[in-house]
Length: 240
Image 1 (cartoon, rainbow, N blue to C red):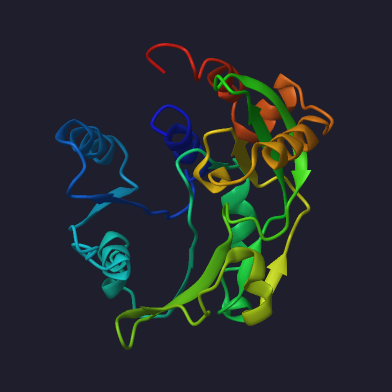
Image 2 (cartoon, rainbow, N blue to C red; image 1 turned 135 degrees about the vertical axis):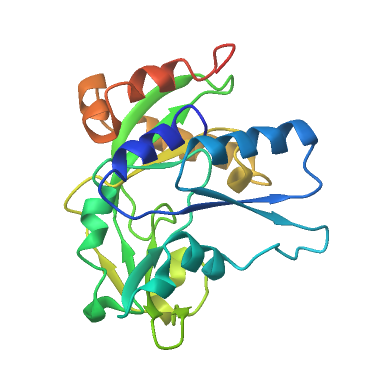
């Protein structure tokens, strides 16, 4: 996260208002809490939010956003997008440009999905071995919900219903925009989403991804920055 995802986000959000809230448990070892606090100091768009052992957060995310963006100082409503990003996935350099067009009254309450992205494959030893373009509508990476800050109420409202991301269009309005690559999706054997699956099925899934036409360094760097490919290649090296 600190070597790849955050520097990429810093490049992508140069012209956009962005807040990245990192949740962590107060049971996390002290050395890792120190690392997170160092990242908060380094990147102006990062805010930490600690949860106690009962699962209660120190602050509500909406309150963090209102304070960070100084929303109480504005005299009009403002549309806001929110999405989840795991530490082994990324959004592309064009992600925020794509999503900005949906932050308006026409799409309030919608989820916006970018269906086109890049998948990166790692082997059993966590070595980067393959990357390819992939079409994955409603993938959770960058799946943005459009909400609104009400200057009258001084509150942020997100009206959509919560459900699994692959079922989102069954209970909410969803717009799919796959005209440009918008995400990077890591696939490796130790991923938590693969735990409990039979080895045979896991191999079939990984082999199907490996069979996709590969992208070269120049193509990958175009979407995610000039040093992205080399960083992925060296991810399993000491001090990375």
